[in-house]
Amino acid sequence: MCYRHPAPSEFRIAEVLTALGNPIRMAVVRVLNAGGQHNCTSVLNLIGIESKSTMTHHWRVLRESGVIFKEPSGRENLVTLRRADLDARYPGLLDTVLSGALADDAMAKRVARHG
Image (tube, rainbow, N blue to C red; front, side, top):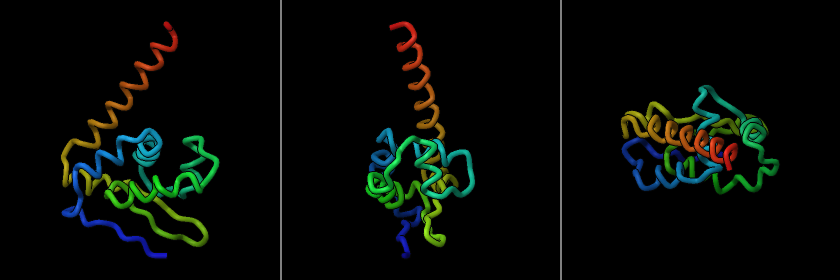
Protein backbone atom coordinates (compact mmCIF):
# COMPACT_ATOMS: atom_id res chain seq x y z
CA MET A 1 0.00 0.00 0.00
CA CYS A 2 1.25 3.44 -0.89
CA TYR A 3 0.08 6.41 1.15
CA ARG A 4 -0.35 9.95 -0.12
CA HIS A 5 1.48 12.54 1.91
CA PRO A 6 0.96 16.24 1.25
CA ALA A 7 3.94 18.41 0.38
CA PRO A 8 4.66 21.07 3.02
CA SER A 9 3.26 23.71 0.67
CA GLU A 10 -0.06 21.81 0.77
CA PHE A 11 -0.32 21.89 4.58
CA ARG A 12 -3.23 23.93 5.85
CA ILE A 13 -3.20 25.35 9.36
CA ALA A 14 -6.83 24.39 10.03
CA GLU A 15 -6.10 20.74 9.17
CA VAL A 16 -2.91 20.67 11.25
CA LEU A 17 -4.69 22.23 14.25
CA THR A 18 -7.60 19.80 13.85
CA ALA A 19 -5.15 16.90 13.85
CA LEU A 20 -3.34 18.22 16.93
CA GLY A 21 -6.56 19.15 18.73
CA ASN A 22 -7.67 15.60 19.40
CA PRO A 23 -6.33 14.01 22.64
CA ILE A 24 -5.58 10.64 21.03
CA ARG A 25 -3.75 12.19 18.09
CA MET A 26 -1.91 14.54 20.43
CA ALA A 27 -0.75 11.51 22.44
CA VAL A 28 0.60 9.98 19.21
CA VAL A 29 2.45 13.20 18.37
CA ARG A 30 3.97 13.32 21.84
CA VAL A 31 5.31 9.78 21.41
CA LEU A 32 6.66 10.51 17.94
CA ASN A 33 8.23 13.76 19.09
CA ALA A 34 10.92 11.70 20.84
CA GLY A 35 12.24 11.05 17.32
CA GLY A 36 12.81 8.14 14.99
CA GLN A 37 10.44 5.77 13.29
CA HIS A 38 7.97 3.76 15.31
CA ASN A 39 5.72 0.95 14.24
CA CYS A 40 2.04 1.67 14.74
CA THR A 41 1.59 -1.11 17.28
CA SER A 42 4.31 0.22 19.57
CA VAL A 43 2.77 3.70 19.46
CA LEU A 44 -0.64 2.26 20.34
CA ASN A 45 0.87 0.34 23.25
CA LEU A 46 2.56 3.49 24.57
CA ILE A 47 -0.64 5.51 24.51
CA GLY A 48 -2.76 2.66 25.88
CA ILE A 49 -4.94 1.77 22.91
CA GLU A 50 -5.43 -1.92 22.26
CA SER A 51 -7.39 -1.94 19.00
CA LYS A 52 -5.75 -1.00 15.73
CA SER A 53 -9.14 -0.49 14.11
CA THR A 54 -9.98 2.41 16.42
CA MET A 55 -6.90 4.24 15.14
CA THR A 56 -7.55 4.03 11.39
CA HIS A 57 -9.28 7.41 11.31
CA HIS A 58 -6.67 9.05 13.56
CA TRP A 59 -3.74 7.81 11.44
CA ARG A 60 -5.45 9.15 8.31
CA VAL A 61 -6.11 12.59 9.83
CA LEU A 62 -2.50 12.85 11.03
CA ARG A 63 -1.12 11.74 7.66
CA GLU A 64 -3.40 13.81 5.44
CA SER A 65 -2.78 16.97 7.48
CA GLY A 66 0.99 16.51 7.11
CA VAL A 67 1.72 15.81 10.78
CA ILE A 68 3.07 12.29 10.24
CA PHE A 69 4.73 10.26 7.53
CA LYS A 70 3.45 6.68 7.33
CA GLU A 71 5.06 3.94 5.28
CA PRO A 72 4.48 0.21 4.97
CA SER A 73 7.18 -2.11 6.26
CA GLY A 74 6.31 -5.76 5.87
CA ARG A 75 3.09 -6.47 7.77
CA GLU A 76 3.40 -3.29 9.83
CA ASN A 77 3.42 0.44 9.15
CA LEU A 78 6.13 2.78 10.34
CA VAL A 79 5.26 6.32 11.38
CA THR A 80 7.44 9.38 11.80
CA LEU A 81 6.62 12.90 12.95
CA ARG A 82 7.17 15.38 10.12
CA ARG A 83 8.73 17.86 12.51
CA ALA A 84 11.11 19.50 10.04
CA ASP A 85 8.31 20.03 7.50
CA LEU A 86 5.94 21.40 10.15
CA ASP A 87 8.63 23.68 11.59
CA ALA A 88 9.47 25.00 8.13
CA ARG A 89 5.82 25.69 7.28
CA TYR A 90 4.67 26.89 10.72
CA PRO A 91 7.72 27.90 12.80
CA GLY A 92 7.22 27.29 16.52
CA LEU A 93 3.73 25.80 16.18
CA LEU A 94 4.60 22.26 17.19
CA ASP A 95 6.74 23.38 20.13
CA THR A 96 3.94 25.66 21.33
CA VAL A 97 1.29 22.94 21.08
CA LEU A 98 3.51 20.36 22.80
CA SER A 99 4.33 22.83 25.59
CA GLY A 100 0.64 23.54 26.01
CA ALA A 101 -0.11 19.84 26.30
CA LEU A 102 2.53 19.47 29.02
CA ALA A 103 1.09 22.46 30.87
CA ASP A 104 -2.41 20.98 30.64
CA ASP A 105 -1.11 17.67 32.04
CA ALA A 106 0.55 19.43 34.94
CA MET A 107 -2.62 21.38 35.71
CA ALA A 108 -4.76 18.23 35.56
CA LYS A 109 -2.40 16.50 38.02
CA ARG A 110 -2.55 19.46 40.42
CA VAL A 111 -6.35 19.53 40.27
CA ALA A 112 -6.55 15.77 40.79
CA ARG A 113 -4.30 16.00 43.87
CA HIS A 114 -6.11 18.91 45.44
CA GLY A 115 -9.65 18.14 44.34
